[in-house]
Length: 149
Image (cartoon, rainbow, N blue to C red; front, top):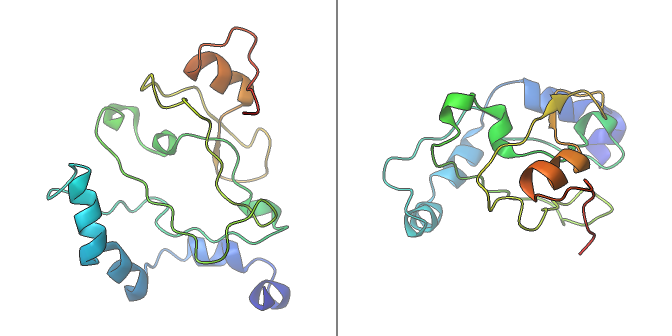
């Protein structure tokens, strides 16, 4: 938090710098991580994607608030049928207050990618999925509302 106090936009700079430090590369290539991926049937032909490998998130930093989305919305549509694995590894305590990940139960079941926008609810570069689109396109709910269970 001290870093963000001294330099409020450090999360954006860290992401946009485009350099994946060796410590993070080592984490992705660790034997335990490779074994986990193998158990999911995605090895040995697995490549580390250059998209969003490291994203910093600071509490109360509007530019790094990530709206609802599907990870594959960052990839070209022609790749949506390929298996992708996203591993979210928080480096600090993940709480609601500091921006933990949330998942919409059952949104993955159809295998569809819903329509996403950019900059609709945030002033950022993130793709966004409205709750209405998620409810209708992924959960088949005609009223377009997500239940809070």
